Figure 1 (cartoon, rainbow, N blue to C red):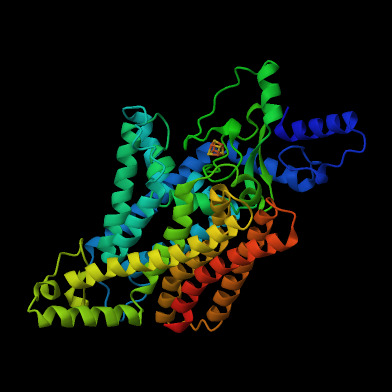
Figure 2: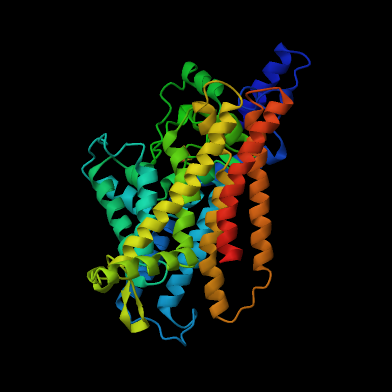
Length: 494
Ligand code: SF4
């Protein structure tokens, strides 16, 4: 029996046992809905994925080939001349492909179709799993499973990327992307068997992808009743499936960890690709377990560090700070921080295009990003704490849940920041993109309203008092305003 048929069977059984039963009145995860044409279509799509694993593998190897070509080759070519174009220079083409298209639109895809990129196309995941197939197969050590890695890896990669100008030059891109790929292969070789231990725990964007996937209107849904029934009725030894990112499928309720590979579609007649509301996971699932590492990543990572990383190069405050510190150093005859020029893999060093960072630049860059993260993250934390406190005496769980409501605005900010490279490069090619400002404004306002709506829904789980609910939502709105304000300053003030 397929998962699709199991849903229909369970629904009929409930209608038989409870005349007048109305599925829509009850929570989606408790009672199955009437399977619609859309549900059948999604189920068939999941089945299509499951049956096309060898095709998916071939696609992954093609992506690996293109990835190696675009990451490695430009690093050994001279820097492009000023007159070079995206279509005539491999370095510029690779820069546009990676930072103008791949990175912002992979992020966007997470919110649209979950982590399908990870499971169907990602070259690092494919290489890590392939290495794991022939590797040592050790058990995953505890240090790898540390929950703080997604935050630490994101912050370190973001700051280091700014220090060496990863978006502008091919050698830093090879160092960061190639280093990450080498790490994925090594971890795959050492740990797990046919698994993606790197992707599950250590990938620098794992945490961000997991957050964005919560917004996806599609996921692999597990029917616990059908699963249990399958175990009890002769399918106790159903053929095991290999979930490479180590998701505990039976208890899976969200899309954060699932790579959408389709291998478990219809497993035990209980798993199916299914549509869902884009608010469902954040409102109904994300609050059941507090995840401080996720809260840190949203508030101090995406809304703090990422904002600072885009701000510093255009900020008049950064220039004023640099001048003041430089004068202070000169007055004391301390000139080495102004002269010291570390190599390109520590700080940007391209004298041929007049682009170099001194030791002072590097130190202030890190300090500026840290200060921005502390200021924005601290203010937002205060707002969320007050929102949680306004609804009851012990705010910790609600605080973490309210933080989840900021995912749309945080994701939108990072998408807008990253797509700035796309816009700059297309401008450089002479394309007039007059509508971009309007589009950015609409995205920012839309995502801010979405976050506010999530705040309202989450507040409604704790109180029926309309005034308390409105007050808590207002405080979440203040946090949204602070987050959006940081990006608005970057886009329209500086
Ligand atoms: S739960 Fe695992 S096997 Fe199933 S679709 Fe997600 S990643 Fe693939």
